[in-house]
Image (cartoon, rainbow, N blue to C red):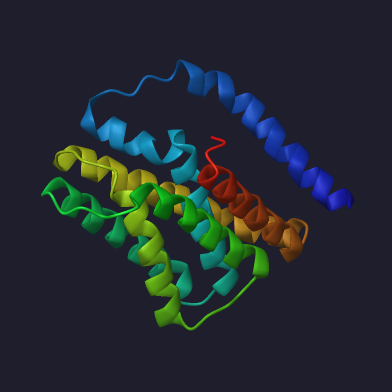
Length: 187
């Protein structure tokens, strides 16, 4: 219990220290807009963190193959939307992807690599579908997505070592709950 409190206190202090700096940060241009999109939109932040957490839980080649599959799906879905291909129930799918990814992390479920790639690709497609922009925007978005997924992967390892895998599962439960609240229209 002391380890959990220590990790939560550390995260709170880091967030409190970074908040004033982030509040003053101004990012302009297409690259900057794409870079910050996965951080400033709560659904994207939680979804990509969950993909990173789950990649860390699965270990092995999943650590790099799941993030690459998610990013590829984000870009493919965004470019498909940009040329006019429609994805029905995109908003609901985005919420469902949070429930799915959060639930997988909460359950600590390890799956075969091919199934994991398909799962994160499906989730990534709903996160990428809502974006449109030029080449600089896509470069920034790619960087932002990989940074947030990498943060989730690092969080999985750090929290798993500092406290336990149970805390990582609790993070997944929080993401799934956020997906349910998003689907219900609470935020």
